[in-house]
Length: 493
Image (cartoon, rainbow, N blue to C red):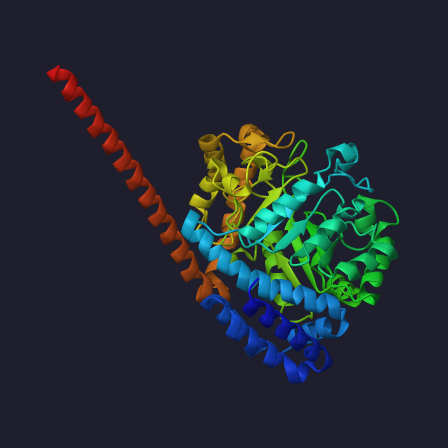
């Protein structure tokens, strides 16, 4: 890190401390400072937009809640790691990488250091794994070192249950220049581990929850919901920045899209949350539990309404896809390293582009699987239909046939081989296309801002495909030319 970045970081930390003391007076100063530092136009525009809205509700309540309730060391460490390391240093590395390889480094890398878990949830097979199945700590360390070279300073840790491995705190401590978002069932976060979270100051837990007590205990076991409530109280009382995670299914869709559910999480101290659609993967995959097209549409409406009415920031991988230009898998903005070291293009696509124990990460990102996925993104001009598994299932079938990747989990290839599952996904895709067409064409936010982005991304994709076709044509013509020259020489002889 250069002197300039160190000075910027020092000023940022001091400014955040001032903002904690008097948000009303100092928050605009922080935003002006960040806007001046932003390395690209897009970030400057986003910060300016934040500045225009920051004093409006519910944004003001959310931001002041963060400033007043989060531990100072956590706030300054995470603020530094995100704004200086991710947006300034990381962005500069991203630009250099794009010049060299033709694609940017991931915004985040997902790592599953273990598949072990202390719970036995219905439909989950984590109980079958043992310590010998864990990803060695030196491999985790290597992935992060390689990621930082590409400009990645945000890491998402999953499992299994990540907090079953206390040695991961060595990773958090060593890589203090990174931020770690850790998805957890929440039951192992006792006072001792929460104390460690305060010490490392760069870890943000994300608590998995199915709904209220009935829904959570039915799947995770009796008494788990009460443990989660205690865990959230413990995190809030210690000033830990944390969020929540929901798997959105046909069964809990109504429960987790109520004001009462979000109000409970706000009261407990959560600042943001992730909604993930239930996906037809794993053992004996089926569409039976998937949220319907209308439920998925309802989730998007709920998310957009909550963000303008309550001091919490829920997110949805699918309904929020327009904001990131569609699918971000295949290393475009993220990838997943599983407990065996296999690099998967998406947390839900259990196919390998290579193993980090055997190949450098940059080589894996250039693998046929990863590069072909990036080549075809976005998969639809309607960015509310981003997914190659459930929205555009024929796209991934083509990618699979073209690249022949190895599977990383039992039954993964049923997505492309099981006639019933493929037929069910085709029907589901049709229903979602009908439901999302109206949203894409009528919601003002999408019409005014993101239709143009979609057109630009489609044109960029066409341009790259045409360039590739021209390269192949020239290569073929060169082969023909050399063949003719060789035949001409042989004829003279």
